[in-house]
Image 1 (cartoon, helix red, strand yellow):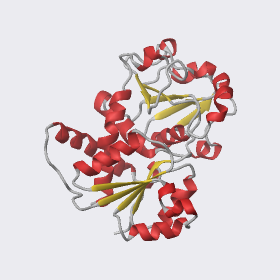
Image 2: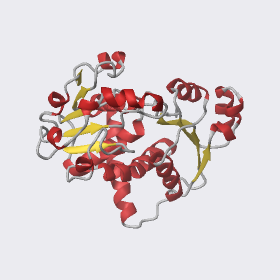
Image 3: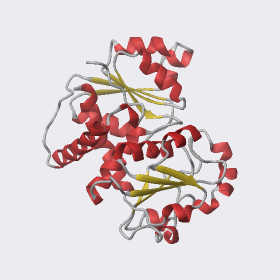
Image 4: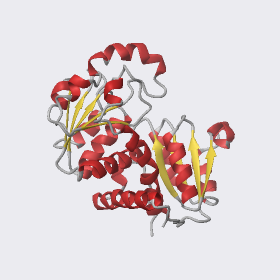
Length: 300
């Protein structure tokens, strides 16, 4: 059987993604019941992270532990990658020692190159272009709380970043509509937007995007590596804060999502983040169960 990678949501078929989300819900229920399930005993997952992480690192490490396997955390500075070893050489060597690799880095091209030369499954733990693992948890969260996301409406408010791109792919794969609202000059990748024509629309009116939405999503205005742009971005994004008045335009049972970390008073008010429509803590918890479903799918 050919090696499967998970670099974007497009690497899996729609039916596979649906099954994977359902499996994550099953694994969560079994975990809550205290059932022992160790399908990855004696399997090892290497984790190459050159970006800081809380949820991605913890969820993958705990997932492997609960599955009876082992996770190895590696920073580029502690490997030969940090001394200039070619990516393809590292990929070939690691493929002979571990069973899968998670990479969290800036360049999506680096992850693609690693996967091209790897003999094992490669998982995108976040790049500047996409963050597909987060979307598995997000879709799981919505399905648990509100049912099938198909034919629903989601609104993205804020930066047209890697999370926005992944929500755009999710709209295509899971069959819902996404309205994107960003300040001028901060929109999503134009080529991807053209590919998602019909399921995604984009503009600069946050109120119009949120009106009638079933899900309202935002993210930090300055992602990792953009700290020097923070003041400029705060000025540009001032009209794109998710507050109670904006949430009031969404459907009554709409949920608020944020992948975290969240900065209260910037992209979202504390009232919304801590309010009854917020499901951010469920999203965070579901990273563990979605990751477990993904690892089971790729390694078994």
